[in-house]
Figure 1 (cartoon, rainbow, N blue to C red):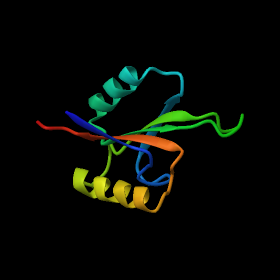
Figure 2 (figure 1 turned 60 degrees about the horizontal axis):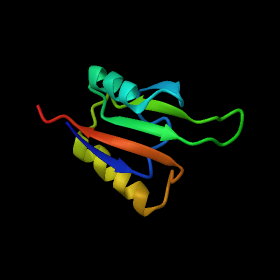
Figure 3 (figure 1 turned 90 degrees about the horizontal axis):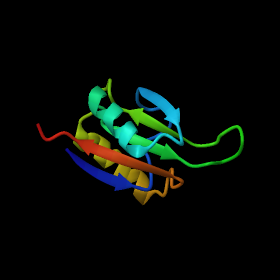
Length: 94
């Protein structure tokens, strides 16, 4: 498994996702993503009490390839979109 980190996201509500409390340890989120063979983990930041930040596991039920997701995320980085999010793009080597 390889993980590449970006200060962006693939998009808003663009992939199937499961959300988790922001206080959940990253290793727990990574284990859940691995079980689902998800392509992406996203951590959103605190905005206000209605939007306190969360973890999202995305891309576990999608037809997008790793390279397509990587391209979309890198395009969003160039356009400075979703800069208050951190995403972890996962490449399963096996």
